[in-house]
Image: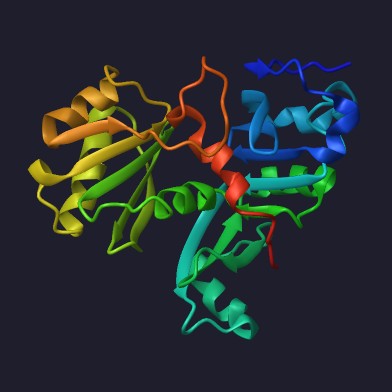
Length: 270
């Protein structure tokens, strides 16, 4: 029996063919979402689940089916990018000192793109639950797919890409098709969101009236967050990119960061 609720379950989904499907899972400190795809087509989507679902695999069998491929974006509690040109795998422990790693945290090191290695430490609770049910071989830096999806679509120098998940916003910028800025911030209301985006634009020396803000995640054109951003910036749009074939009732921006995990493969390194 499966106790989870699903925002979408395609009528072609067949649990007996799980070995032919890919599980995509992404979470933050309090919740996670997962999708199942086949040949880049969305078959199943379940959002905003408690990590407690991991405690009862028998009751949540579609999450824990024996999928042929798994890509798991764990919430991170700290990260740093290291240029590939100076990165030495034998000195991961030295780079990890920048992360102030606690005894119950684990550091992962993996390529982000052709020029950057990412080191990140995982949230201890979700880390343990993932280790117990899936192991850690399929863990990737959670924003990696979203970053790669945007990088592969000729990002403009004056564009700030936002991904809003609950009360967290990720902000991304490229210059001449190379990653220039990525960071995430916790915000409590639309004014704090606008503040962090403005700070990022100022640091990048971008004039607000010339900035295109392109939003994905939990956002709609007329919501408080987007309305407030429109007050400060010249243009605010939802991200039109698609990382999977979606049913008509789904917006591409709403599940972009989750479905874009398909671009990552499972490349975790300890």
